[in-house]
Image 1 (cartoon, rainbow, N blue to C red):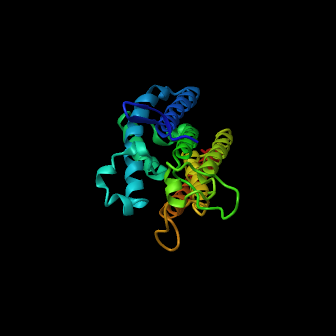
Image 2 (image 1 turned 135 degrees about the vertical axis):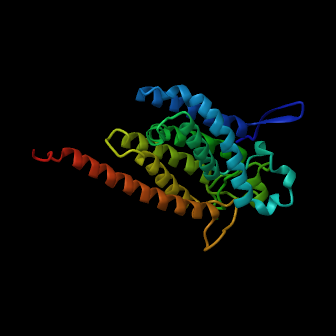
Length: 268
């Protein structure tokens, strides 16, 4: 594991930035492929939309991390808040801000939000999986000590080492990357069947929220917020509950509409 690729005039080129960028790029490429396969011409908007949500998502991810995860540090180091290249991006905040930006973009261009979201959802989780490699290379989003002689040993230049020293840590970010790829497979499988509009995106929210909730028990980069739970777990519970309710609503409505279409017409 290495944090730095090289230095240019004393300025570090970090693997974090490279893999973070690759997550956005390959996510956009996959979204382009899925939308082109869908055949409604929406693929022409992928890269304009990608730039928009990448910019807004970075802002959202950074602010979420600063205020919900690391405020104890940043309230004494306000000038470091813009230093996104050092790491410190919250996926949940990035996704929430990006979804809001995408909603307004799609409305502006008169693109149906739910069908579009369903189609590109696998690309979102694919980009997240690559992004977790960035966290691993940077030594953040790490686990707490395993208490045994197995686990990941981080270099002494990383936040993980500064927090726990040379103790072996649970591979929390690696597990999340693997979990994201499993979710990707499940979403692609679900998309093969007839389903209500919006339910693929809801399924993504539910699956990722479950994954994140349980992985937080192994995370060691920040403490609890309330009720013995961390901020990411509270966000995950809220997101899962909302997505489940919307998933049920869309599914029930879909079945009711399908049943109404099959019903015989009124006699004349």
